[in-house]
Length: 141
Image 1 (cartoon, rainbow, N blue to C red):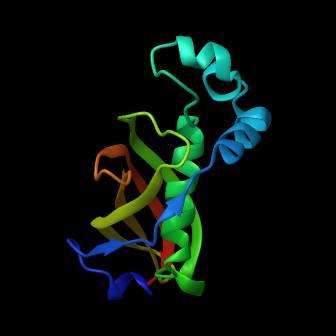
Image 2 (cartoon, helix red, strand yellow):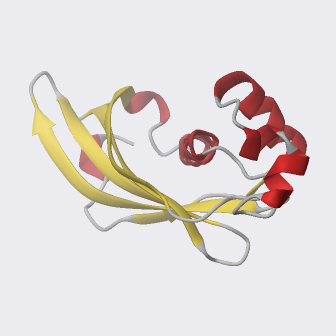
């Protein structure tokens, strides 16, 4: 969709994504090698009572689910910024995540392009919000 096709207040819901312990450990092993993501014994004794997903992993899944909705299509040029990122609740193995995406701003800029800003709100299978962040992208007008 081009910038002009989005309206502030538009809301979209993504498909679900089930996160496994293996997914969590694989991602963390490469990008966030901390005990709460990798060491089950130590994680069981910690604050979260088990392995949890990296916040960066949750952000990446949220972005993936939004992109896979296909709303940008070929009209997206590039991401421009992330703001107000909040990791609200831990994400555990076998949580099923989905994202509610709300268009919160759009601005026309030069060269037939604009900036579209959406609020990504990610929920687990208990409808608890686990992540929230604003994503801005350069899109064709």
